[in-house]
Length: 250
Image (cartoon, rainbow, N blue to C red):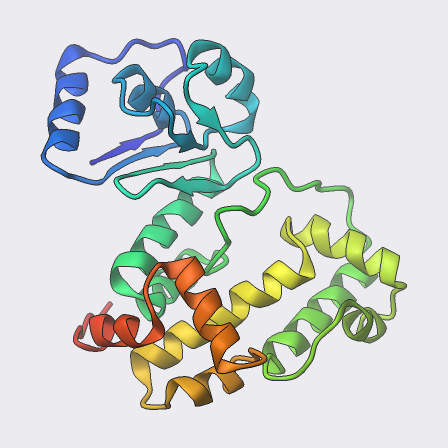
């Protein structure tokens, strides 16, 4: 059950909607609150002691109204298992793509993202508020080229110094521009990209887990398994069995 935002934080939801949410929760349904939809879930009493996200501009209002709910002010979205909430605007799309990726796999989610012309995957812990100064076009282009190079060489050792050199920037300048563009660190961004590659290979290929770990740029199979389980809560082998049995076309 999805609440796709809400009119205003102080708009009181109708009793029929609250009752529907409570019943859905009782029968084990997944409940999603996008943007200000998180306020509706909180009003229904579903978020006590939970970690949630909502639009950063209304974060203070939310915490004042619902002090027993833990609000992650920076996260794009928060997954509590049966309840998922997102920040505002573009983060709601990220959240929906995350759910699609979780249920149907990376390949399907990536196809939808391409149709929407948006980034295929942004980690939930990524900052929802990215500084947008007037861009220096030359630096933006060089940074994009360096990132494209990294995506084509994920199986290699990639450091800030390597990409800073390719972008013709100092280490400090590269780090600042990279965070402004992506809202995260290079280490986290590389991990997300490598996990995305691993997902696609598990879904569509026949390579062994060991080979996938190497192709995606993980230092070892052990490291790959640990990061995969930490992110997706299942092992690579179980993930492959789950998604390889599906044949979904868009």
